[in-house]
Image (tube, rainbow, N blue to C red; front, side):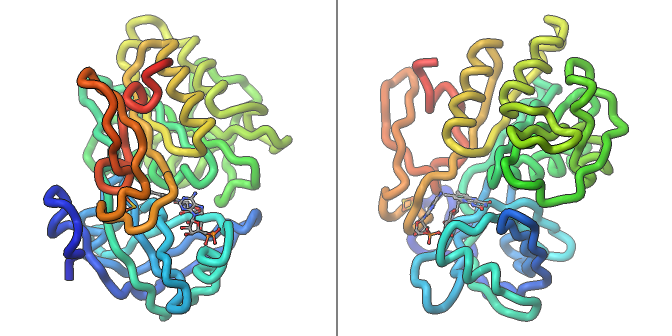
Length: 299
Ligand SMILES: Cc1cc2nc3c(=O)[nH]c(=O)nc-3n(C[C@H](O)[C@H](O)[C@H](O)COP(=O)(O)OP(=O)(O)OC[C@H]3O[C@@H](n4cnc5c(N)ncnc54)[C@H](O)[C@@H]3O)c2cc1C
Ligand code: FES
């Protein structure tokens, strides 16, 4: 069944399904990785799109979660989330074999530009899933990730086993060695950042690490860079500032509060700027990915 009250752009591509929980793993910092069987959602999911999940039959409001991975062959969809309150707490209790009602995939994802072969992908906290998805999507599409870089930031231990990277990256401090193994295995260089004193991580903001890498690139390589980011609002703004400083194209995935998530209530509307001026856009169906200069025109 498809959601009936979506706008035309998303008609027939947002599905309501009873998805079976395949597995759920917990990590420190109340982080969880959930895998469900949702074949229609998996079929149409793109990096940046999300699902609206009924966490418990007793909790009427669904919770939006970005899709971290979608396997079109097996129909499995992965989410990474951090518990904030009652909804995601209930979701963390889901066990293999349970059924979850899922609405998705929703939203327009990242739109990588082939003119910019060097992708700088930045994920902060629960903004990591769309960035992981984007790098895996690029890899599956046959794009070379040789000159690209994924930077992940977290203030709680990373929800994966940090691995020393075997992929050398110029312009990154020698002590910043650690990477995400899933990205390493597809040949995508990644590095980790945190203000906490985590071994192998850059000590500072992930956006400062991004700026260090950009600073070290020769001018002809710098011109090839395009930035993608998802994370908390201050991180998105800092990313937009870095993009403006180096005159780079940049797409941001917003994670605004939302209610219906299918374009009907305008509860997620944000001001978006273009040459025609400002217009209120719904993050759920007009986004959640927007050009950085359309969100932060003052930078
Ligand atoms: C498009 C999108 C993608 C997201 N992707 C992820 C993700 O991949 N992983 C992850 O951990 N979190 C993600 N979030 C944030 C996540 O949806 C909220 O943290 C979650 O809704 C909080 O629910 P709760 O039951 O734990 O907290 P509660 O405090 O019980 O939630 C109370 C109410 O506030 C709303 N709410 C609270 N915080 C947020 C928020 N930041 N955004 C939207 N609604 C909120 C809930 O929907 C609910 O209605 C995403 C949000 C959006 C909009
Ligand atoms: S949440 Fe209702 S229009 Fe976006």
